[in-house]
Image (cartoon, rainbow over all chains, first blue to last red; front, side, top):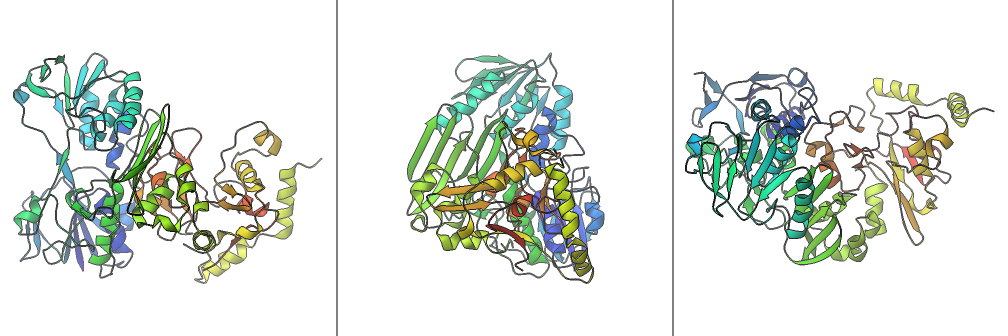
Length: 409
Length: 177
């Protein structure tokens, strides 16, 4: 069997590991338009922060491709899939045939059309290691930075460059930071931590137009800057599958075995949809763990195995200068709240299940909560009153504890 | 007087660790996967395992110097509620969700089945803490990484120190297949 994988990040690498768990022999070709050994994409902010470096941020050991018998085609774009002929057209003019194909093409930054954006000289997005290297060159103690977007990407970018820039302003339409991840109280904690490090926020506001080095906001405020970072969101790279006639909704439509509607074509990661185990909705859950789960599942199935992945949930673990935010699931239903200064816990429960949670500066054993959300464990089977106080295995029945702790898992 | 650590080493020599035998088994193709298992009914809740874990991972040879008057950050933790007590540490899951979820590639599962964290690669995002269903991965005290049990393969003990000094066999180290 010949396997072709488009994408060199978490989903693509996971697929290699999934394939090799069943097929030690088959030929694997991996295509990436980037020139680098696989790296953890979310690490680019840690790179700028100095918390990691080029070598340590490699997602797998140096000899990963060799050990797994992977032929890599770097600096090459997959331009088109011919599903009838079972081949992929590449930007270098080559055609490459496949037995099974994985599209793990990721997502790309969304840059909203804004008046005067063309007049801005130093503008960046923040998604790839290439972006981080470019930003590293552009930012200095003499330069003012404007970040558009106070979501995960924008704020991690701030953390990375805060100590390198003269000043950093952050604009977002929402009334709080991390609007899709946190509620007002939780966002307040993060905002204060970032303001302490010099962030200047312009919330409930947006850029109406740019003129060279000035952003004119809707509120009337004007922000002068030398470097602009656009971090308002990402769009899944669905075009390859769409153009080949495959089903695409917001992301590439896949089943629980990560198969697209095209014969022998699989998809995984930020370009593909997941079925959210909490809501049952199909949506793009652009998270690294999800990319790995899907990629691994796809790889096993590409190699003739039978694996399903049906426990996708939204989740985030992110820190800003030591302030830790851990969240999972959806924020619907009744809630239980504990707040004390910069610590915050909010649990959401509905229909007898834990639906989601927000934990700020209370990371300890959060995974016990996450597993309740992911597994849809009926709260009638656990001591929920005890769990509200703190995540603990004590809340499970003795028999359930024995399953967890007294046998191989 | 002989230090406690020296006494331990002497004892280990005396008892003769079964490792060479296991190595032979492995060479013959058998899979030996010794793991820590909990016998909840024997646990007294003495928390000695936590102290032994902290000592084993302190890098020091004097238990008093390592632990006295210092906050400890063990990788095993005992849960207590009324008369129920049990120790929890990493299960070294067959299909380890922490390894799959790690954003930096710092977590890996070795050929020996042991899940380890490379603290040098870890950026401390705590995704592993968010996904571990046992609550067995925790923030490291330095604030820049996560930490977890590696069955004492990452320190001088070689075999789990918590098990070795559990007075009541409430945690054991064996192969349950």
